[in-house]
Image 1 (cartoon, rainbow, N blue to C red):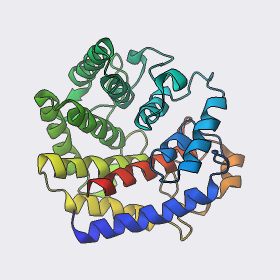
Image 2: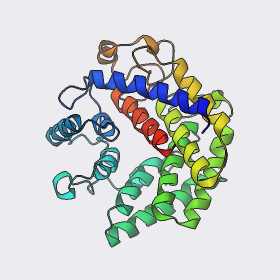
Image 3: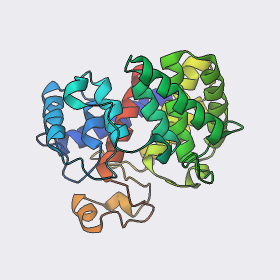
Length: 296
């Protein structure tokens, strides 16, 4: 990554860091979320805040059928906490009821468990997701038994996950599939308009995923994507306020929001899906920007 992109990335990250640090209190963000605190814990250096977040997570009500076990378990495992204490190999629904990126995320948890049966299960899920949901490099959004949906944002997210799967396994077949996904993502990222296509359009997780995935492609596949990464970073910077806040969906309307607006409107915001939660997406962006910085 060249100096221009690297510097812009640091500026965005540092401001977002200040914003999120100002919002976290006793391990909790001020708005309801599924995994925001755990993702934040995955990137911060402050051990006191990490401990507070982990303590709060234990007390959380996780009975909601929509609770994001894959996201939380993916991070809990990386935080190095005890499996017995945090039960991060538990998932409340069958993998085939999940979309592509969720299946990949669950598989990563299994692969990193070092348990033979779980590792085999992880590979099985990955292969099913690839064979049924990838066509000509594009990773389609949706469950494996439903009609394939084209979404640039979810292709980016699934590409990120496939990249981590390749790095975890060093499997040549996964590398080939990751490479074909990166080539497609690089094409998609040549114009910011493409990030207004499909489910999750203009939502920050798509930009975060693409930036990190393309960076992995540069580092491990030697596919230069400097121009594309800069395009994505500039779009994020364009919507970042002085206090570090970035809207979940990059619109001028949401750029003016505060916590009270989110409380009042819930998920009834232009560009949002019913499952969207503000601090989930802020922390997701924060975490993957941090991982991108670590690569360089």
